[in-house]
Image (cartoon, rainbow, N blue to C red; front, side, top):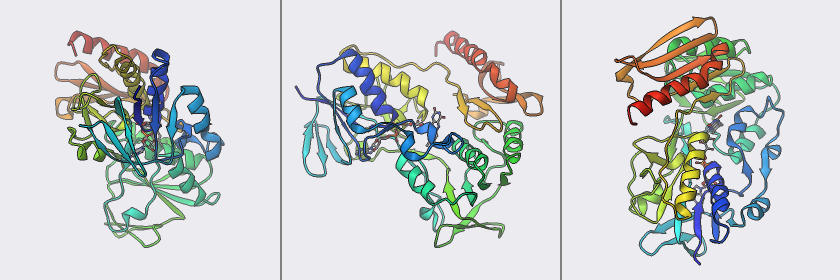
Length: 382
Ligand SMILES: Cc1cc2nc3c(=O)[nH]c(=O)nc-3n(C[C@H](O)[C@H](O)[C@H](O)COP(=O)(O)OP(=O)(O)OC[C@H]3O[C@@H](n4cnc5c(N)ncnc54)[C@H](O)[C@@H]3O)c2cc1C
């Protein structure tokens, strides 16, 4: 029997393998990863300092334990260079491998700063990245974080809470500018400023010096640090799919069954685009993995996503967001609350709720509001 092959052992690959094994213990399963195959929970990377965890302590199971748990073959430190959809074969570094069904769970690449020297600034999108970044830090040193989005704010909070001197730079005007209105951003800024985080907003970075530790802003400001971290977003890894002739948009395009334009190839996780959107978070992966496991086990199952609030790991200002799935031009924010306890609701022209951003005590309302959005979507037949 030819195996189901999953490329990737991140949240998407391992969750799918687990869900599949609950339904089918017979079909051979092979997972391939270019890293060492250790199972870790990526969201822990941006709270490991405060949790007092070193990189090795973040590993939940080494590859060998995962092989046993999943009754699978895991090819670690192995890169898939190409795939031939017609003959259902993968090109590895030293051999070829045939598959019955193939799943692309290849994740995303962190974006590098698009300025001269930008490639020298580290990003953190894996345990290996994190280990390298952390190894370069000396206790209490100065760290510049580029990007005040979700990941940038989480690292800023975690580093500052652990005693590092943190400065955050962003071209936008407030933290989480793509997910929340200014008032919410200001609350997050106030919370993190309480940990002595400093900020440069509306700041365009012009260049990075040779050692990647000095950043020059367009207004002439020079920021010199012991370490710089770039957290400006990510791009789905779609090269393998694109070169194989699969349909690719912002990510690897899949239908509601997570099937690509080739009927034997599927995709999920940070690399996949469904309905024109990439959902690079854990909850969508869980829903996708459950549906795809059923499809792979023989019962075609469509994925559906309920409203999925995202907890931003900034304990200095507890925050939960649920990004609206409608274009920004079609609605507006209304913010109520006091101080750092804010409720921002995103409604359309008819007053229907589509998204929210909550801080402080208002975060307690996240499930109630998510439910309300779910009912609106159900009523609209979405
Ligand atoms: C710092 C940080 C904090 C986060 N916090 C949260 C949070 O609080 N809540 C939340 O919901 N989400 C969070 N996220 C997002 C979440 O972690 C991701 O959505 C999720 O981990 C993505 O999993 P994935 O399996 O799709 O991709 P990845 O984890 O990137 O896995 C990709 C896999 O593909 C393999 N691979 C890629 N190309 C090849 C190839 N050619 N050959 C062989 N192997 C290949 C890689 O080796 C890897 O095993 C966070 C992300 C980061 C970076």
